[in-house]
Each structure stands twice: as C-alpha cells, then as structure tokens.
Length: 161
Image 1 (cartoon, rainbow, N blue to C red):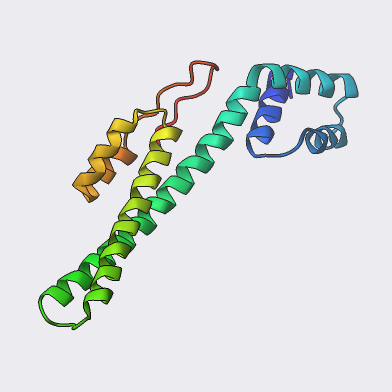
Image 2 (tube, rainbow, N blue to C red):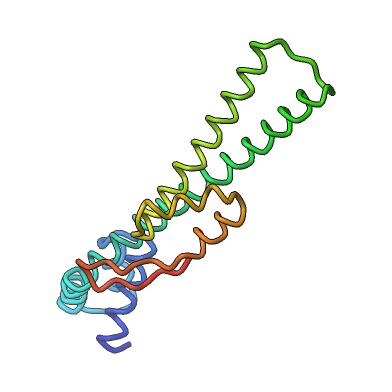
C-alpha cells in the first residue's frame, strides 16, 4: 500500500465514523510504522476534516428531514381521508371531534413542511423551494431531486441524494 493508498484508507475509515485511535491500531496491526500512521492521520485531518464533518451533518439532517416528510405526509393523508369520511356521512362526529381531526391534519402538514426545510438546509438551498410542498407528492419529488449546492468553505463533494 502506497502513502496515497494509506491516506485514502484513513479518509474512508473517517467517513465511516471510525475514530483515529482505532484507525491507527488497524494500521499498526498490518505493519505500518508509527511515523507513517501519524503523518497520514495529520495530513488527512488537514485536508479532509471539513468534508467529513459536512458529510456526517448532511446525511443526518437529510435523513431526518426525509423521515419527517414521510411521517407528516402519511399522517396528513390519513387525516384527510378521515375528514372526507366525516363530510360524506360515513362517520358521525361531534363538532369538537371534527375540530380535533382538522387540527391534527394541520399539525401533520406542518411536520411535513419542517422536514422539507431540513432537506433544503442539508442541500444548501433557499427556503423558497418549500413552496413546492404545496404540490404534495409532485413537489416532494422535485424537492428530493434537487442537487446540493457545494459548500463554499470546503472542497466537499457534491451530494445528489
């Protein structure tokens, strides 16, 4: 393994969330010298720490945003279905129960909007894109397929998911 391969290995292990001391132990177990290990860890940290941090942050925020969108949309559809059943006389509810169902629908839609905002933040996009959520499923497909804007502070890779 060359020094470039060593640096690539260190970077890939860091992207996987492995701590430096564990990476150093793995490398020393396969025969790398302590100075080579320390140099690769130091060089890798200087060139890639912002990318690693951004990658972890991006994936976490994007995933949480998608989960909120799916949960909010699912609940919203369920409450809308209940409202249709009530309005067409299939289910009879008192006025107070109707208010609760309508408030729950508004709350679930709000959760979906928060999820959309989190996805947009992870992709470094303007919050104005959240207006597409009004198109429901079509708008959500467009939001999830937006390309990420690159991080101006680092040499990070552009994420497309």
